[in-house]
Image 1 (cartoon, rainbow over the protein chains, first blue to last red):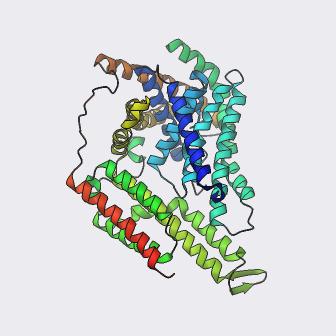
Image 2: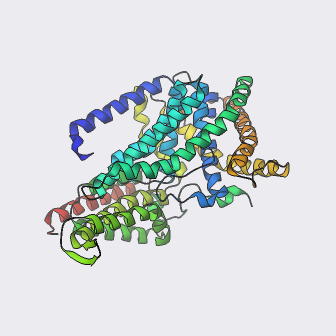
Image 3: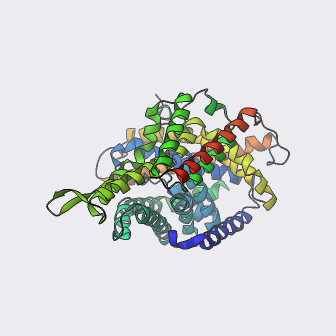
Length: 204
Length: 271
């Protein structure tokens, strides 16, 4: 990661900023009701996350960051499928930033970007496949896993000796909680999305 | 006892020290500056100087060391891993201990020690920020700090308002989850027995009412806000206005001085 150089960094950060501004321009016509729903869905995602720590305390075996939760990604997937990928990505980024504010874990700027705003932001990509929503959730989940794997590689390339293969370890570590997490989200969404869509359309 | 009384949001420890009373904007900017400066420190003397000053600030703010160490828990594994990997697999330096094909080398141990202290300091700075600033203050501060993005038509105020809503409703929805889980168990939902698949299936009966109630709450909240003529951030005043005091200026200068002193010690020091 250190080989990127300053020009690479500036390009990366600039393109991220442009992406965020483009994303925000899609939220121009948000009404108070929409903001309230977005806030409530974020609260629900956190409530599910905290509840699962209470529910299965023994699941907190992953020492840094990762955890299997009781479908805490589902509210973000719901927003992505119901309101489109832009809202989903936006909600994911905010979830990530908020997660960082509550329990910060930081050792490298790129690790922060990858583990928090980007990892959860890409969950919203599920909204690109609104018809085949299972595919969308799998893609979103795998995209999040990729972000965590990259951040793991950054850690190992700066903290492990030369010759150590960072990719393999990072893959094994992150897949160990992300794959169950994706499976839970797919299972739960397959069961609730048809009903949830009906409920939310009736509410509007 | 309600579930929300047991689960803590974030790491904030209430208090009335100088650090607690500082403006969240000052604290946020100081933490960011110090974190960035830490990346330019390359010698162990610099790290030690920084650590000593940081710990004296913590002692002065009356925060028990226990809480600070709790923030380090997530990196304990990383530190352990760094030590093991560096000690056994590093190819530089002299062998101190040989045991079969495993050899511990002094250069590896030294490198592991160096990296651990750097990792610890990075995490300590961010942990300290969240220990002395409540999430709601931090959200408010970020709202004010980034309000200039309003020029780019970024809905900064709306985002901050939404974050505040989320913060306010996390405990409520947590309690609601608990209540619905108990209600469904009492009706025979297989949430506390059977294999993991049965339990997850049973959890659907919790999620649907939970989502419906969250939609309803969002509706009621938006109606209540609009009934009170809420119309976004334009010209809106605050109940608790944020004012920068002289202490904020002194604190910012002190943080800057700490950063510069660390850098110059790092530049002058030999190891």
